[in-house]
Image 1 (tube, rainbow, N blue to C red):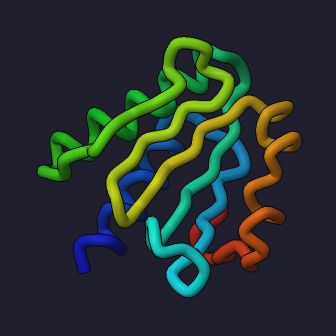
Image 2: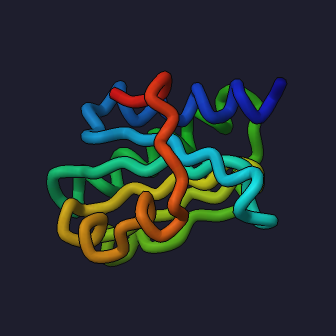
Length: 114
C-alpha cells in the first residue's frame, strides 16, 4: 500500500535527522482531507526546516510527488503535504499551542512513535 509506505518513509526521514516525539495520527474516519498526519518536533527553526526538507527530498527520491510545503520562511511550523499523508514539523511551543493530537482527538498509533 503506497500510503503506508509514504507514511513510513516520512517517519524514517524525520528520525534520520533526530526529529523529536514523532507521532502518527490516523484520521481516516475523522478527516476528508488526509488519511494520516505525522507530527514531529524540532529543536530550533533551522532544525524544523531541515526536518521538513529531508522528508521532501527523501519522498521525491522514492518517487512520491509532494503537493506543497508551507511555513518554511518562519519555520516554527512547516507542513509538507502529500495528500494522503500530511507531515507537520513544529517547534515545541507551536506544537503545544496548536495541540494537533488533542484537536483531532484520535489515539496516536504507538507502532509508529519514536
